[in-house]
Image (cartoon, rainbow over all chains, first blue to last red; front, side):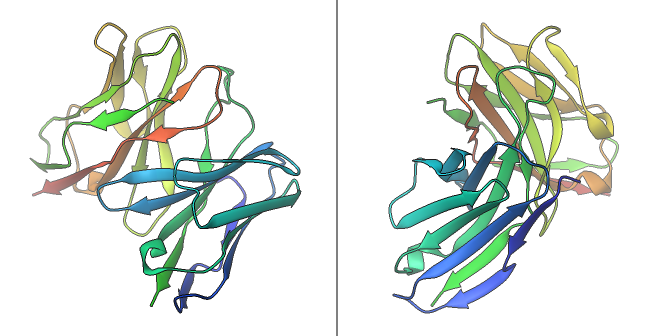
Length: 116
Length: 113
């Protein structure tokens, strides 16, 4: 299994509080992603990173920010948590895309976040 | 950006019967296609991928998929399912010039004895 650790694995927080989720990889992969998974929507991309300090928005980025100060860590912050952000959050990593043999993404085990 | 449509949200199937999960994507010049499986309370695991070459792709656990460019489809098949194949299956696509994966909504497969 790819070396991806998400922390925490479970969290309950109150509306209006900031929350930070951490993704740590030991694979030295260039690309890192945060997705959220909700029933009926599959996985939707929140933010992604294509290198240290290089990040960009995905399709559902409102209310979220990210930071990547080191290759191995990608942090997702909910600036002021809302009930609509209750979800399962997955981190993914990839060495490359572009058709090479190792074109694929590897996923962490997920973080279940409940905002009450 | 690519979009992916999984045509069936739920597929019940009896053990040892065949199963087909349908996936269509929006057209692009060149795409890469993936099927992932998610077992309960776990992350996603790659079943198979199409990058180029043969349109019939074989993956793990006896699954295979066929890339059809004219129909923009990438359907997943298994000739004989087991109880352990009960899971959610996701189709995903990436443009050749991009490095983001777009996922379908998922298909829940329930295998019954």
